[in-house]
Image (cartoon, rainbow, N blue to C red; front, side, top):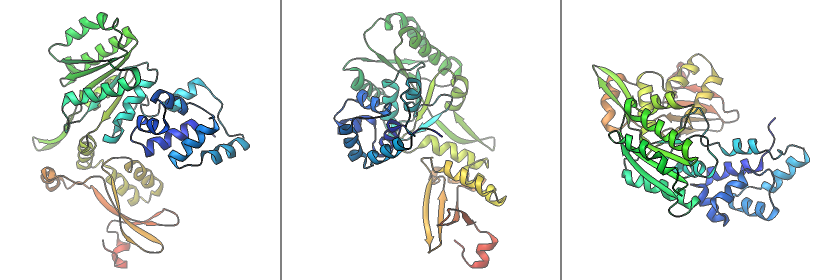
Length: 363
């Protein structure tokens, strides 16, 4: 059984209740770096613990004392501490972060020691590219100091200039680099610029954030639905050598397009839940439902309720007007309803099953 780590528990609450660590640090009247140190602690000063408990509206005193009495508190360990804090950017996994989590992700990368560059695939079509770089630099400067983050801009035609500048860049006083790359594709594109970001990181020992476009979408080519994206193939190629994440825009375009394509191909979450229930695999359905709830496009609406049950309309996405033709052509399954027993959480009935029709409960 995993030991109780109070710093990790505090981090969970901060992630759930604050837009960023910096926002929580301001309320706590501490710097971001000092706040991150709290997340690595297995015990805290009582005055600090009281203030944290009040800000997060959670009684950490009671929790900590109970765990101490039962001998369930973790012992301080440097490697364990770094693993606990490094929860936003796990290795070998592509995470997609919603608009409100961008600052926290970039903060974590800048604050903690890193062995790899961070490649952030950004879908900020509601912002200009210069604004993307500016926000990232501001976050870095809040940690390293004014002027200590160097912005760089390159495209596929002048990447050789970046390679030539690496010796000079390693000697400047700045502690981090933010590279905006205007280009697409892997051949002579993302492959090359990621390799250069890796070289700059290795030569300088400084933090390197590479911002690339995450443009993805679904189209019809020769009568077939085609999904186009630079993110997944880049991640598959480089996942062992970079930290990678998608910073989705406020419209959740990346998640929307990926799930729309999966639904068209019969591989969406609603398909998976539907088939599990059809095969009477309750455990599998609950597992897929839990995964689906993590996606930014997921919606769960209670449309009927009584003493014993609730009927939920679950939807992976609301199909946009420009994609209505895809619906007409492929009729993808993007939503369904399920009846859940309140006491146990068990799924009792679903969609237009024979049982529902017999009981006269059609949605």
